Length: 228
Picture 1: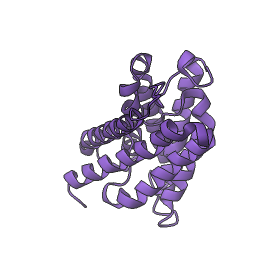
Picture 2 (picture 1 turned 180 degrees about the vertical axis):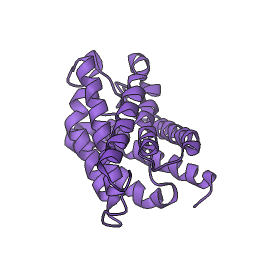
Picture 3 (picture 1 turned 120 degrees about the vertical axis):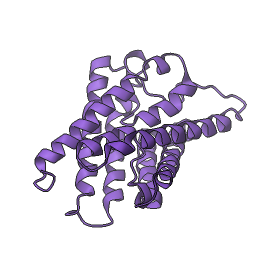
Picture 4 (picture 1 turned 30 degrees about the vertical axis):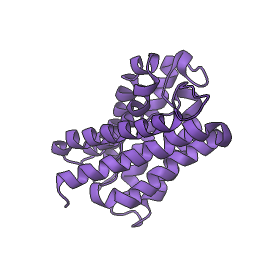
């Protein structure tokens, strides 16, 4: 197994790539590609980064995924904090790169900067409770796909494709609701620059994805005889 430093580096660059590709597409090209295009951008970035560095670190790129895999007995508790730190820092650096690019536009307006929100800050103006339920459920389903696709009984080499498609589907459903988090590192990366209420609501996009991720990991353990 690679050293923890190398695995942290892989998580840093993987999360950097995820935020740069997904949030970058939303911020820089969202008006041209629409919600479907943004959904595909997130799916493609997690797929490509999983193939690029997933063999080094496991390709989490998401604190909720790391915690879900820990709950599913796939990841040791001792590595949780290093992974989460690497993920958050990688995401923030990608947010900074996107910010530097966007301020180069003459009519730049920060807007929501692809940040996540509920209530009046939801793209579809969904109320708080439905938005938070959506985050919990979507992250839980994401973990079920990740656990199943990476199971040793699953076809080898295809896990990133299933995971990328799952993330695409999740975005297609939930962009109108919360602008789709399911990833605290992704939410932190852009909320920091959007500021205001997006920062004050950020705790929700840590708590709900983590609850969903841990729930998904535990459910898969119950379903899988091998995990038991």
